Amino acid sequence: MRDYKIYLKINRIIEERKTILSVKQKEKEQLKFLGMFNYCLSSLKEEYILILQNTYLTLSYQFWWLDYYSKSSFYRKRFTAVSSFVALFEMIYENFNDCPDFISFA
Image 1 (cartoon, rainbow, N blue to C red):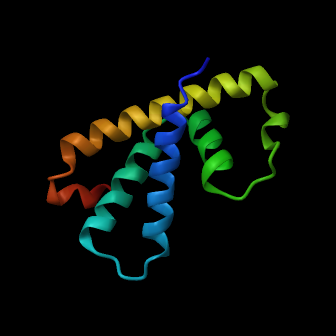
Image 2 (image 1 turned 120 degrees about the vertical axis):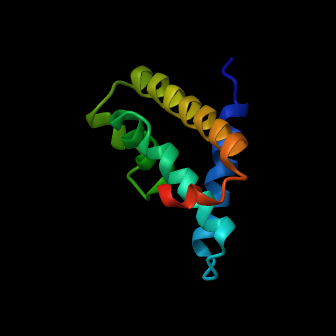
Image 3 (image 1 turned 180 degrees about the horizontal axis):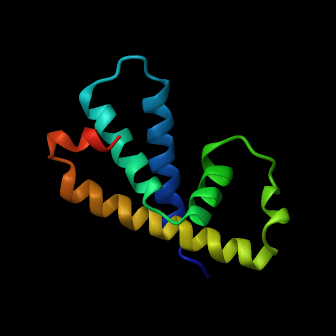
């Protein structure tokens, strides 16, 4: 059985990102969060970025991945992409959340 806590974490992070994007008032803390999110996303392999963007961040065809991967390969790569993103985001968030200049990475 897979560890679904990772999927719950990325959904929480993405929902927080959507909430911040929908707010017109751009406070420094919100911009810093978006900067961290974008930095973590851009730090991943291109393949993982493609998977995360098409699966969670944009409105894509539900089975967009059929042109690229078999079902088992997609699920394996999606799990790795999500795990990598969550681990990197948590590390960045814990270590650089108090850094006021992190916004420069946005």
